[in-house]
Length: 477
Image 1 (cartoon, rainbow, N blue to C red):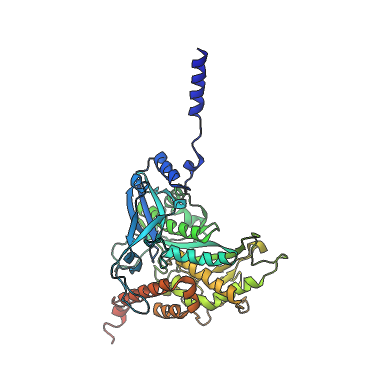
Image 2: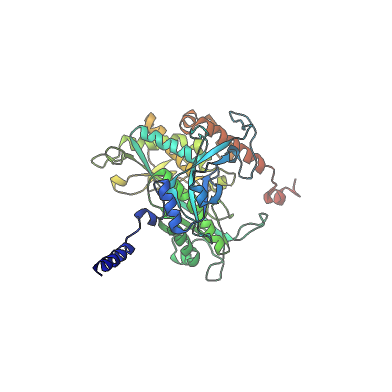
């Protein structure tokens, strides 16, 4: 009898044993064994193996989770990362050559990104993958690898960049016909949303249920939203993310865009990250806050021991001023992007910097010295987050390497001044191709591939006759 009691106590104790901590992780595991257990513990049968293309669109494969964990080799055609936003392909030239064999690139899952897909009705997981050649070399022209290349360049100098993106987007009524303009959605009040609602809590509350789903979907993936606000545009919202590692934050923006679109569709609404979706309304930006940490000391290199601004701080800004116009195609990647970059609008069209001055391209927010940072306000929300972060950090790094001195800060409104940035996509591409320092840092194969794609997209756009042309040219010329 005593033995039986002991066995019962042991059985009861065993039933209270907590599962390994990694099983409760909402995001990421360390090993393939942990991945197998994590998927089984959640009853997940399908997994999406995804990676961002040049536009930031999720490409990849879906498969049963048991096949995923059985050492299956995954691959995608190299052409996937040479396609335009409309599904076409660029012409050879200027260093770009379309691969005749269209060979496979291997997908290498990054298990630290493993998470659930909370909007799916069936239990589904997702994992972000890197691309490598068949011999294991990183593929130079894929966006996640481009950003990793820039971060590694900082690491070689003993530094670690820290970023915090802010992403604006619009909610609009469903519009399956592209010939009709987009219109603001109807909120819970039953009335169409109007503009001028900057930081309005009532404006946010118009979309309570949709925003709740954004939060729930985000929590289900282990994604953390710092703040959410209503911006100036009609139905325009902004999400701010916590600062951190550039690759991790780019992953988060990549996943947030999917999440927000899915939440909006659930409520019969579109979420769009177009730079200028509605005529007469403000454009949507992706502001990037940046600071640099010394890996040995953990200190911000923009602040001296006494809190003063360092040479590195000024050199970083100098690099931004000198090279961001040449990298603009990474921040404003489409013809529509340049509709946001207009004079006397909320988006900066200059290369000036200032303290807490939102009319400058490079704003230094008010902060303690240890949190000193530079905000790049030029990128639009249509930019691929991996490429926007890579381009911005690359410009700053060139300034640090070459000790580029910035202009004096400005304390006045400069939005009405002369436009200092390229005015069109083609002009941006030309400057991008000509900047040899950017090309060396980002990778020549990426620069030639990306430039070829953008030229092809421009030519496709030129085939479309706009309403403006029909309005003013049809009967007047």
